[in-house]
Length: 258
Image 1 (tube, one colour):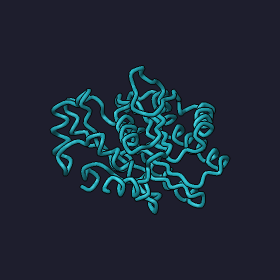
Image 2 (tube, helix red, strand yellow):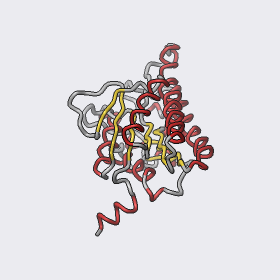
Image 3 (cartoon, helix red, strand yellow):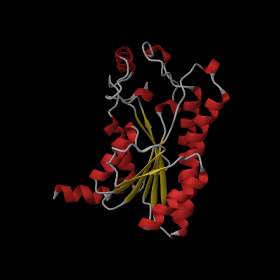
Image 4 (cartoon, rainbow, N blue to C red):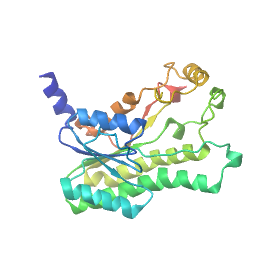
């Protein structure tokens, strides 16, 4: 009875879900959660490891290339007749000091994070119209650093300092989500974003000093687990969020509330 209730209120069973950046830490967690909810999960990434088998299927894709996005999305629509949920999770960053930032590095982050996300939304909506789909949900993965600036005092033993271009693109993702929420509402497509805080990586742990400093800076005194980010994505994808659009959910342990 409880499982039937949960299935009904989330209504994700049998839904076709596409996750970009599917082989990264967050993408893997999202694919796993959607698969456990009974969804048909298509994982997209630039490079698919031979031993990955969480999603229902995987396809290689560089989201910077609009023609490639159109081709892959078209194949998904042709096979399944629909794409119910699009999770734009693929993203990159660069970590050298901004004084040394090469133009190519700046352009790379802009192209993947902003243009790539736009490519996915544009191609999805055009195919949504072509296949006369009735409703859909787009969830864009932003970052708390699209809302606040990093506190560089916490990076005592970590060289991966968040960059200005990463934060700018993630702020752009939040705004893009609001834009498309408004412009796609009449098509019955919801568009929201999730802004994760720092996520602990057990396979490649952040430095002990960084984690301790991060905990002091965060009201909940710790980094996030990838499943906690995936939980917000599943909420936005499901029927419980049927009246939620144009919103940005910060899953950051309260970091942006200081």
